[in-house]
Image (cartoon, rainbow, N blue to C red; front, side):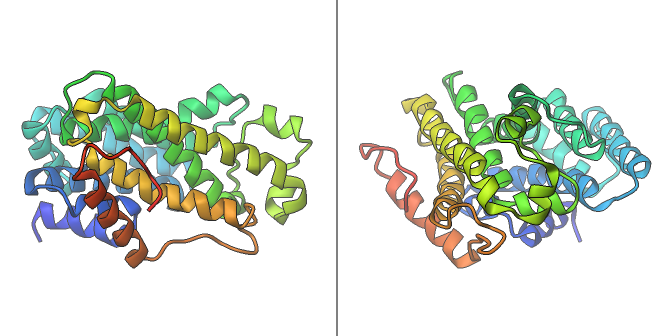
Length: 287
């Protein structure tokens, strides 16, 4: 199996919404996005699946060293090999790849999120940075496209947090900052028990915050970069459907989990792609 095939299998097998937006890319961009996303999967799986903290940090340490080897031109891992190829085609900043690892370290070390600024930093590292790397592959001309990428990353990550609040709580992760939990008089046990009646005001608040972030992101998208950043809009449309369904079940994901089938994801991506072929149409995420 080639390094490119390894990355594609890693991305395809994850079931991520991102994969369905990649399908519409030209070959070189698709290959680079598969490499980037495979890198994200490798480090994210360490944070999610390695229970021993010291072992997980050592494994993340390997990836810090692999990023250095990617830059030096002597990667060892198939994902590193593809990242090395991708960096020769596109401007993938080494510091941003390390920032992604820093985000996973926050999960491994169970770094407490005390204030909203802590959550914003976490969202930037694990999602905004992915957006910044992605637009280097998609291409852009206006520097404000970077603001769009960061804002959209925060919206996507808040959607993930709302969708996965039950499964995250089961493994000891609560991403809502302590200052907001205190304001709503919530204990960790409320998340573990799935006490929807008590949690609902906080979840609704963050659901509205996520909606607002999607609107803010679209407002930041430079018109001259709308065509090249079409894959970002497609990813946003798929995640926005998740958010709509969360609102529809009033965030009671303990009783009514929210998931989109692969067929639904590709249908949304296709409809968004068709809509975006006509730049005179207003930007939208509802498909």
